[in-house]
Image (tube, rainbow, N blue to C red; front, top):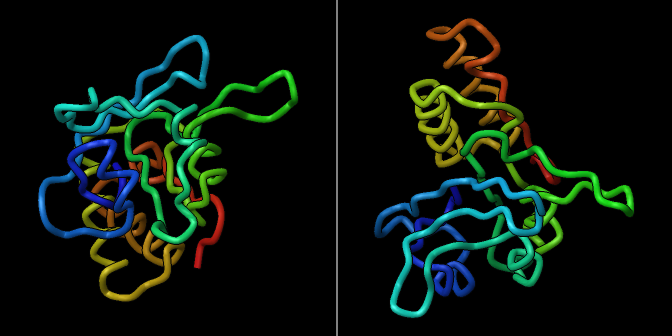
Length: 162
């Protein structure tokens, strides 16, 4: 999920920062044979279908509007190795577009454990913790209920983790 609850791609491009009003977008990851066409699905509007593909993310300028992008769907940190030996995927696309930090997952996720982890993570962020500290504390809390690492260790931060 993106940290910004925005209803359309156009609004995403205009206001990627924190916005506590409105609903969070529905985000699904779609895998295709060409990773540049993998996408997240936001709520559409009259002008956009809601699909935001990796190649479109590369065209965004998120430097001044975004502090963190959270991709909470399954395997969002996974990408494809390109001919130039660079991994192409959503994680890299958001970093390229200028967001300083991306949080993404390495494997398929359990919905209940992931929901609890996200709730705790955002609570700690809002309480003033840094990104890495907030994730680590959320993982500790989830680990109490779900001790196996499958449930609490799927997410990592890339970029500025302070």
